[in-house]
Image 1 (cartoon, rainbow, N blue to C red):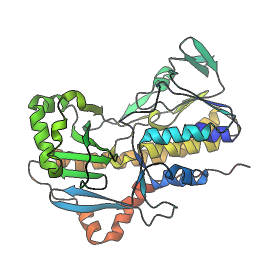
Image 2: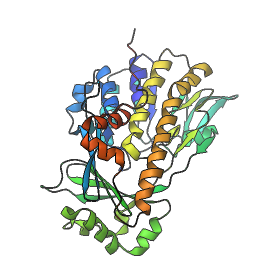
Image 3: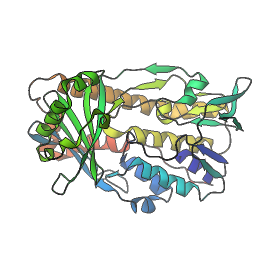
Image 4: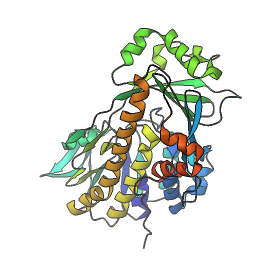
Length: 378
């Protein structure tokens, strides 16, 4: 959506296809990091974006057993917004769609699922949506970690593995609950809560493939664990009356060896599925979109230009994935395997004692390894 907005503003006729009738997906990230907000400012959209309902998170804390520790501080970043904006991604996507629609070069079609590619020799020359053939000079696949576009294009995926999955569910939110989103870590348990105002979106982290074991232990045991972790929620864990209310999010980390072939480019999770660690997936995708639009807005969709997008974004993506894998292996897996209260990570203890240290993860999470900027239109 963002790549379409930027290309349309540059005068490139752009059609965005969305297979669903709306953008309502619970598994989409809600964290607009300072790097993304800076892109919005450079596009002249920040004020209108922040007019939408959102919550501002200037720093992140996490609960390790009985210890509340500082994880990251965004207030000192050299950007306009030293905070994460917590906003449902469906609101963000709808906002981008409305802003993009101001351009005569932009079109959005809903209920339009790509189920085939068109070819001229080895070059991708368009897409097929049902019985309709849509010719185009360039196809951008931004259809997520289970990308149909990359599968249809025959691009090779390198799986890096992930030791965790997430059970995803909601709990009602009441007055007197904690105000901000949070992480909660205890012996054998890791839980993330996202404040969506009327309710908590909860992510219960489990070892890879353990969903059936958790279900076999029974819903009562699951509710009891939640009540122990979140004493303020004991009056509402009974809302979970059926396992149908608890969805499995299979975590994967992978990346394409080559993000493109003639006439086609993949970006975002279609090019590199990220772990939910750090909530950076949406923001990495935004950075990909900015880089792609900057490099392609002239209308030059040659192989060299497509390769330039990958060269620009591949190193930051690989570094981020490596940091996520380290966090999964050394922190989250250690928590899940522990049978006694885990000692809080030393760095977070130091960051709580010496707050300036929290600026380091604040920089990595909030801005990423190499943030992109919108190139001015000439």
